[in-house]
Image 1 (cartoon, rainbow, N blue to C red):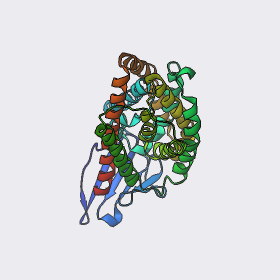
Image 2: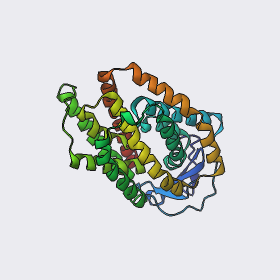
Image 3: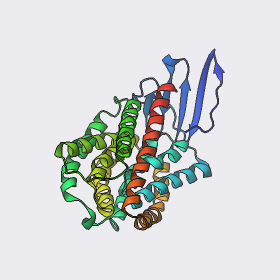
Image 4: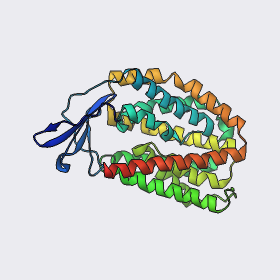
Amino acid sequence: MDLGIFLPRLGGRECACVKTKGLRLHRGIPASARHLYFTEVNLILDSRSGKWGSKSSETPFVTGGNLGGRSTFTGVFLICFMKGAFGGGFSIVGIPLLSIVMDPVVAGGLLAPLFVAMDLYAFRYWTRSTWSRPDLVLLTPGLVLGIGIGYLLFRSLDHRAIAIIMAVTTLMFVGLWLFKGAEVAPRPRSTPKAISAGLASGVTTMVAHSGGPPLAMYLLPLGLSKEVYAGTTSMFFAVGNATKAVPWLLLTSPTADLWKLMGICLLAVPSGVSLGWRLHGALDQRQIYRACYALLVITAMKLLWDGIWGFVA
């Protein structure tokens, strides 16, 4: 997201202009005038409050080039790979590459339809026999409700605070697992925990594409087989991605160029998901669980960085 930055001084004030793929962002100083104008999606992010505001009057600016296209395609491929290997929930691993060339909201609009395509292709591997139906019954109502809450409050929620809270919670969860010897001792299902996990996952997947940690914090302690864990995760996010696709498209109003980019990125789905599934087959139960906990740490650190940097910048 930091391509082509320059800082001219106008009338005693510094003004930053950041050129990204799909939009132009202007950041003015002093703080009273600091806004990031997301012209591609007609939204304004106030850099002080982290909340989305009114429509911008800026002229849309669409650039990218080969570097932008390659970064976007690679980011989508990584997300597809995670879908095949772990059933989903770790899309944030690929999002940093997208954030180099476009703002997070535009990336959200790009990914929303692609997530649905990934889910449909992943059904080839994560069939009904890999779903934990009792858990899905408990989780999905909260998921749908959480996505609705996230959409309604998208412009008023402080995305930085949400990222920090989710990061700290996730790190505490992993720390507790390590404290107990890094072993999985299966626990019985808990309806209140499942509803809470579904709700938290719905809100965070809508506002930050980071719904994986709440779900993982519920499923991992159950000690499910690696196939059932991945299959249940895949089906859970298939429901979530189908539910949030339309809200995200309403928020971003993709341009023709963005739709074309989606079409190109669709080519990453078959190979990415298939290679991820092969990795899943090569790892045993213990390795899969350790990899999931490691990915939780990576996800948490990324969220923590985004949240803290949002307050500092």
